[in-house]
Length: 130
Image (cartoon, rainbow, N blue to C red; front, side):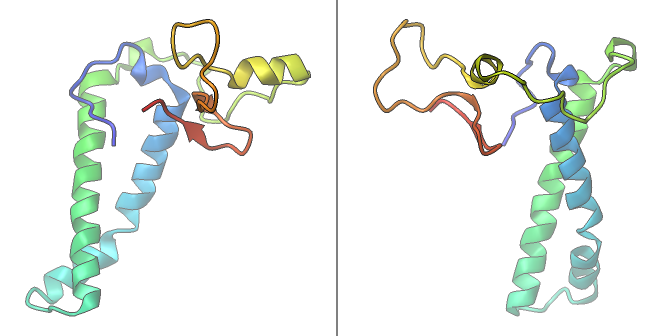
């Protein structure tokens, strides 16, 4: 979960955030059936109704995140005209690949043994510091 009430400079220009907004758009689009089911069956206590209510609640949280993001970070004048949701080409040399995925987890020059690296992993997942 991203708390958009805490200002993060430049967040509105980060490709990953816009990719998350695209995912949010899909969640909102796919929630129509759940909202329809709940509105047509307000007293239903079946598992289907419980899941539909949870999906509706999740969608409403997503809507608040999207609205907060646009309210705090979106300024069309600050967007790069060449901005795209497509990722840049992958690094071509082993050194470029290593440099593009390594992020320091602390200010020390030697990493802790067994510490996970921050940033995108080789499998495309994203690692975060605790």
